Image 1 (cartoon, rainbow, N blue to C red):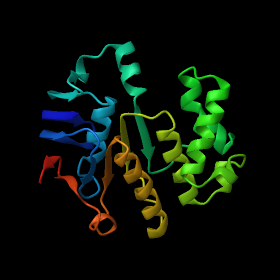
Image 2 (tube, one colour):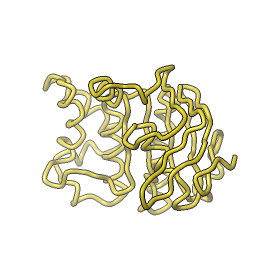
Image 3 (cartoon, rainbow, N blue to C red):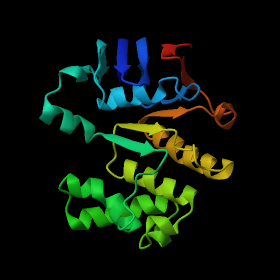
Image 4 (tube, rainbow, N blue to C red):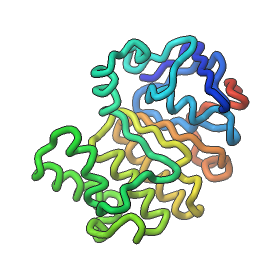
Length: 216
């Protein structure tokens, strides 16, 4: 589903990636491993196409995403769910409103939005918190809201950039459990992490990078 062919991204004042090639099949949960600064976030930003690809090409479902025009890129990104380490929730909007936002941006009707958001809130165990605001939640609960926001539109791909970086081990396990469940339902997931002990008993597929280069 995702193919990198000798991809190089040069980033000003940041580590990029150099000549990286790999492929990921549909529905796989792939850990993107490596130390801080290895280039993991650059790979995720490359798939999202929020950085310029200097050399090589990236194919997603057979399409060269570097050739997408503005409207094609917008449509492509609608099918991607993003989860960030620092949550990126809107603090003056309720949990329900935060999760509903991607659906409203897609033009989904109010009745369908309510149904889908309530379903996903039940899935992540936060149905009783839908009216509270993000700052009233624990870090683990906030990240569950982020997972819910990412999966509510049923994307083909979820990109998770160090989603457990600010969480304790128990909350981290909860987040990975939720992501594994989505992968089991056919969603392709790439999760960047530098915390090998957290995932060592879960790994089936991984890509390891260091200093912007493929290690394993």
